[in-house]
Amino acid sequence: MANRVLFGWELGEGNGHLRPYLSLLHELAGRGWEVGVAQRNTAVAANELAATGWPVFQSPVCQNEFSGISSTPANFTEACLAAGFAHAESLLGLVGGWRALFRAYRPDLVVANFAPSLMLASHASGVPALRIGTGFNCPPHGSRPPLIQAWSPGLDERLERAETHALKSANSVMRALGLPALTGLEAALEGSGTLLATIPAIDPFAARPVTHEYIGPLPASRLASTQGDPPEIFASLRMDHPHVEAALQSLRTSGLRVWAYVPDATPAWCARISTGDMQVSSQPFDLPTALGTCRAVVTYGGHSVVLAALVAGRPLLLLPGTGEQELTAMKVTSLGAGIAVGRDERPARVAAGLKRILQEAAFTEAARRIETDQSPDVGSRALARAVEACEATVMPSAVSLKVVRS
Image 1 (cartoon, rainbow, N blue to C red):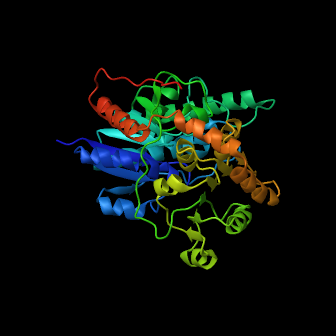
Image 2 (cartoon, one colour):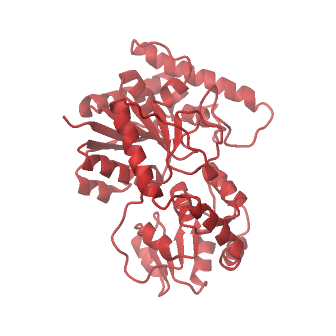
Image 3 (tube, rainbow, N blue to C red):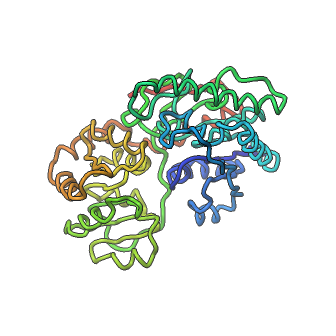
């Protein structure tokens, strides 16, 4: 009988919580696994998933808002509080929703991306689970997850209270289900192991336990060929970013061929602002094609695009908007492989940054050093290791998860 895997995504927005992992799901399917997908946003990759015939479920997600929780979480536990761990009854409902999905689909393995209540449900149901994702959305837990913002007086006490409260909520769920209490959240939220589909150079959390393994970037899903010559600049932008107009104007006047992916734009708007040299689309371009020819990448800082650019040796102009993107931008700029322009900086800095990225060779040289640090078959190796880990988790063998340091 074929193994069944359920890929689940619970927190966060955008394509980066599913699309980078489609190659793993396709490979498992090709090996005879049955694949199911549970998504926070079922619009992501809807056409691609429909073509597979895999069942797609709506992830149980917290619809409540809780008072007394910071709108800018200082670590992963505070993010979990806002996602339901602040309220035992809310968390019980989420775990109950996942367990009902388990009863309907009957997975042998859960592969989770940024999905704390799914991980708790898998622990409570005895379903083996692996986390997969970036350094940011797969943080080490230990006694307390690391900070994702600057330390300030009183923060340690606040985070201790958060940890105690989240564990109390989780144990209320365990008690309601007639199960033994957890001694710490990490026992449930980290599962059997963590696969980091990234490289240590852009992981914001350097200290990792032995159950966390850097596998590197999985192969990008190939899309239909895009009409026209491949670009000299590739851009991935969002309409809700304050610098999007400045970025598009800089790209338009660069005199270079541009592909600009703007997923939250309308097709009519994209057609209206496209020019002979700048092709703007609300549908994704084939990223390997774009990175194979471009001289630079302009992006708001989503992990998958940043990682792909660095592994391809392409320098970046980064326009970070969220805390995760800011942490990624800090890593890239510290490597010398890019320039970051914050949301609150003057729009004129976007044009100046793009000019420097294109004209100053040091940025390209730094990005190419990162490229040369990767094995030529990094994608296929990452895919093989991820498949091996999935198979080992369902049928334990001598293969173990380990941290691979650069």
